[in-house]
Image 1 (spheres, one colour):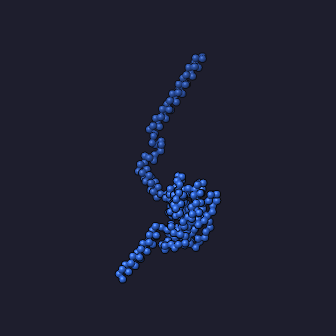
Image 2 (tube, one colour; image 1 turned 60 degrees about the horizontal axis):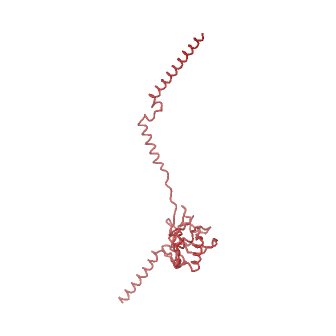
Image 3 (cartoon, one colour; image 1 turned 135 degrees about the vertical axis):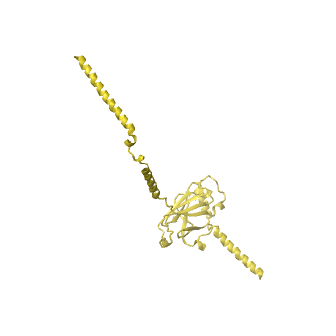
Length: 256
């Protein structure tokens, strides 16, 4: 009986450990339609992708985004592996420097507006297909929201992000997506420091009030230099006039 009890306890702990590990390691490897953990319960929207040689979008399901609304919305992802046909096509698109696109529907992330989750359009983003291949399907997807919780943008980057011409011979590296998800809300810009500005203005006014010299006009400050200069100019002008009159008289006398 004791051994049977110990065996049952060991099995229970093993199951709990397996579930906990699957939760901690995120759910990027889960297939679409599998049950999600209760902590991530919310509403689900599709994540589509497209990669075509002729550069004409042909979106098909890549996975499902599970969005949890609230003050601090969260997002998780379940997605399927790439089929052999898709892996071959992705490498062909990368060889001709084609694009890899994703799209998500426009939805609200506010709990009180979940009833208004009708899909009224899609948001798209893309990277070069060669970057997707060389990164072994390692990408970062961010959902951008406005202040009301409405998804207004989506972005995708790969790790690494540049195409270096590295060949991926083993197609097993292109089976499973390694995706990092995030939600980016707007950040309020700093407002004008009106109180600090007014305080500085009051300090400047008090400083000028304590020092009346700064409030004097230009003439009041520099009269000791201006007055002698004006007198000098007046005297110079008077001497020029008297000299001119004497010279004129001499000339007239000589004419007689």
